[in-house]
Image (cartoon, rainbow, N blue to C red; front, side, top):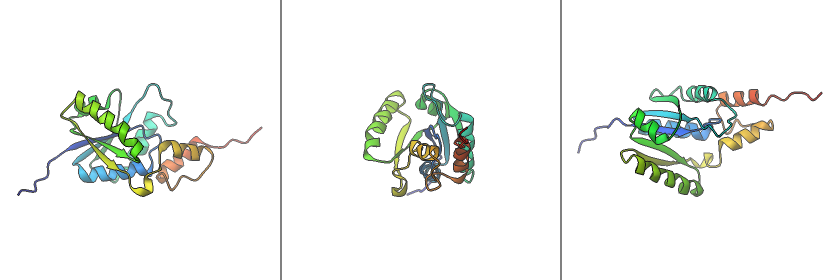
Length: 169
């Protein structure tokens, strides 16, 4: 039997507002599984993110700079359309808990219906990252809490800059 590697482009998409250690773990694991990975940062017109798209592109690029097969791009619209545009055959999704699975499976089925040539691969988070979410990190940081256990150092610095406490008059 031949053990020839097949080049596969995968997309791992999200809002990454901010990128967490859980996100980074999934990016690293996807980069080990696939020949190339695009981290897609979705623009959502109805959301008001803490970090701009440009800031998130910079942060994710910086935390994944050690991975030569990873690129970071922003996109508008449907993830499945972005995958088709990039000729990606795989979508990588992380699962933190059983509650994530139902929602993610529904989206995976819709994507498969829209574009049968693109498969979704689910990666469970590592146990130590199972409870980490960007919203949790934002909440702790907004109150001056230490998020260094949940986010890369460059992200912690960016969060501190966003939540600078101004003295009361």
